[in-house]
Length: 407
Length: 205
Image (cartoon, rainbow over the protein chains, first blue to last red):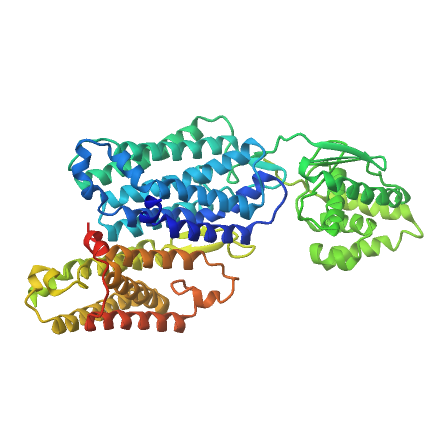
């Protein structure tokens, strides 16, 4: 308890938790997929890592000089951990709790646990870096250097055009319901953090290290950081998987399938309660499509294009209108034979199917614009007299659609 | 006078001002992304938001131990009367900070917000140094730079919270910077400071 008060953890950790939770909650739009929600809530790292590094540097100042007499018999690491464990372990734990609270998710698969481990290790490494900075530099230099260094690293990742940086960065800009963090990026980031923190621990560890010059400590700190980055970059370099800027890969969780109204609906487990609503939409759409001579829908699948099925979105944050529009987009993609790139032809095709699902033009205009909706309304006006004309218009529009470039 | 300038590390202050301007010109436009904190689009924080911390660190270093009693001042200054020393220190602080801010505003192209950022961080660091030691002073400034940088643009009163960022309200930021500097100068002149001896004692280590 004494260590908690003397280290400053008693007031710093609640403030850190509150700030990280506030930032996380402000950003996170829950999708129901734990890895996705935790990745979004991990934005709290922007505050937690630099603030922890700065606070450790502030608290640790002068510690190596004060404890020098003891270090003839005790390990420097042991002394540091004994005095500063409430901050070294408390700050990462506070961030993880903030991420869990603001993400409103509990890890339930490997990627989600990996993201939480990365959050924990990032703040731990930031704390150790601050501690080493306070040894290597005077306090007035160490405090801003540690904080700005971590803020720059975390902020530079998303701004960079380098795939290497994106895959080593601790903040994952992923994930939708259909993607998860790329395994190789997770491994590289974990290795970077583990090697860096272990190297700094080794730097602190020895007993009988009375007077190491500050310059030497600074060089050793740079070497520790370089070793971490080298290990992470080597992991990425030796991987045979292609790297991209999103650092994600397709999700592999098994879909939960359910047949309702003669429609087979296969969704991610967390979206299972949307199956009936989607089946109702498709069931109501069927007669409209048959009337026009277009093929009805028998199978809905979440998670990317599948032959003979319509791909849909069914995340927790989607409204009934979003679901209908998602069915319309999926239907057009299925007819086009691929995930279509944005275009006027695509928009008017989607608008037509969306109107057939029962959406009003006013509901569709904000999402697709006035032009495509007006074109679809004009086409539907022919429905009463010459339904095949509408089908011809739709097929002609679909034929103009180009496929989006996929990974 | 020479002894006083040496005790206040005037050389380091000048070097810090030059380094601040040089780095601002060289890398001030380096952008850092803060995705989605600012609503639905990516936000950008430029490195020049954090560069005035160089000047703040030099200020903290220069006034280390200033808040202590005569007997604990640097030996070089032990014979100077406290009131005269206070006026000298306040003059150096205000002149130096105004010069550094002017260089950032003029030479580095930082404009009014560059001047305001330098004054704000210098004043906060100096006041913090006098009350709680140099490390606590620079820590306060670092946290201010960090927290204002990630404060969302669409959050309440964002224009007034972004004291150090280009999108803040320039007149408000400059007013806050000048006020903070005057408070710090007042503390230097009057010597009315409360010092945590532990913090001050190990702060410069």
